[in-house]
Image 1 (cartoon, helix red, strand yellow):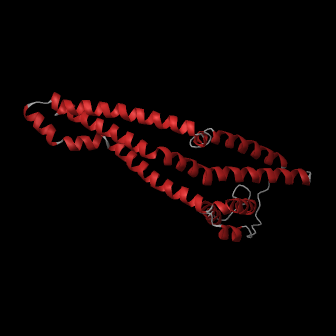
Image 2 (cartoon, rainbow, N blue to C red; image 1 turned 60 degrees about the vertical axis):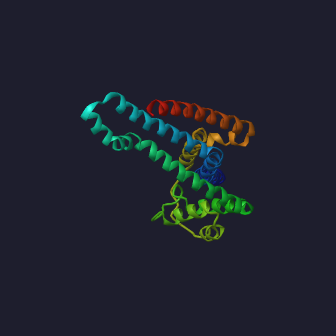
Image 3 (cartoon, helix red, strand yellow; image 1 turned 90 degrees about the vertical axis):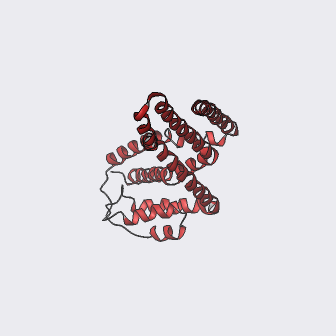
Length: 236
């Protein structure tokens, strides 16, 4: 086995592990946060209109199809039926509102730490090279989880400490193993970049796309507002 070839393959593997973890820990939250910064409030508004329309249609169905004592019973239970049928939409609205709030914190954190972003990347790369679970047989994931948290929070002090920890239980790779792991990881990263939210990154750098998508969502909201008003007027 060529020592140089092995070391080159190992370094390539470490670089790919860094790229994958950066995509998951840093890039995905930032891209999604940027997306929600532009469209989150509109997305919540669209969901709320969909929920309102669903509620009105439930009422409309009861008022139009039930009579006498049965109608009185159904009307008494109307809120229970509304809650049951709109439960999923209510959860989606709540989750999206929480995501919007979290996204503000993520964007603020990135802005506050922009001057040390490169340093933190370098430190995290070093940490991966000395303790990533794909390379080392760790007794527990405590240190690795601590490293990921530190990277997420731009905690350069913690990463600087962790990169100096020596773990002597390296997995026994041969060149064939490494080539196979590299092949799998390269394909995984390619597939990741095609999925949400990564594919949005280039779109979010385009003012033209942002304005176009903004108009698209507002257009859908206006249609929902018209539909909601129409159903409401039939009920009153």
